Image 1 (cartoon, rainbow, N blue to C red):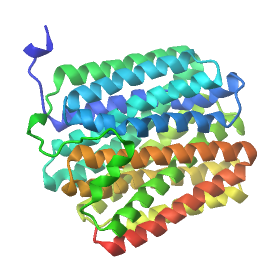
Image 2 (cartoon, rainbow, N blue to C red):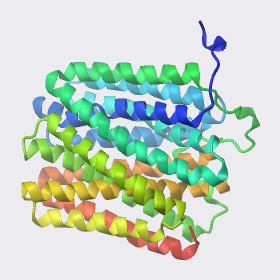
Image 3 (tube, helix red, strand yellow):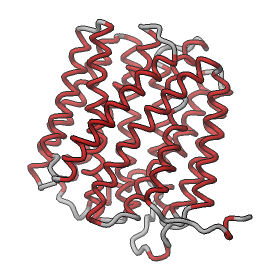
Length: 395
């Protein structure tokens, strides 16, 4: 039976379920990466360099995926991204030298950027204007929960057999791509009037020509700096557990799963209430400020139990941040095509990951406190820019 004889769906529920499984598969390797780095005798800065390479690939290829989204369709781009990500992870498994690891992560990032951007585009395509904010918040919740589940399963699999974990991840990513191709029907892209037309990564910044320059400038810095801070903390935390506390990959997975469950409870209560009331200026400001303070505390004091408790709070707040920042970014889709706006967001997000992970790794190798200080500073400055942004225009 070929895909032409199968009745395809355009259901958002199907998309959310598929996205959830993709997010689980995508996160399987994360708790094992510190173990892989330590076992292969690579420098501690590798964790930051590898993630920076992945994020750089995502940034550089974002315009290509936006271009293809508007021409060959969302379904094909999403599936192609899953297949390419699976290939990148195969290379990562086989790599045993630093330059090979960096290359593998760059290739994986080049494709996963298309997957993440297209998820948001698909949600915007299949949502009514009144439902967009809520559906984006649901996706942010799935992002947190799927990541937690991926960490949990991946951590235990890595303790059993690192190679087995990678094989399961590769197969899982490929299957998600197949399911999208076979069972989902996307919109007819021939009806899109304003199509992405450039392959220059910087061209996404032209999306905001209809927005006041000051508002756009502040928006750029809010997304860029906040992503730098949150990604830096996440990468430092993952490696710190293995490097300083000697935790196995499964413990990393258990912790992240616990964070995910707690975050889910916060998201479906407090997060949902914030989105329904369309009142997120103060919450986002408070979240950015609070996470900055937590990172600052770790500059001076990192007792194991205290470190874990405050880290739980950080990741819960970060799950709220993901909801609020996606809704804030999605509100700009009124100015251009969904693909262009989400391409802009993905470009900023990817750049934040590049700088956040690279400097976190470099600073960590020289001084662990300085890496936490860097995280604190970026989140604090992001909160200041957001205050300036909301003074320009009601968001």
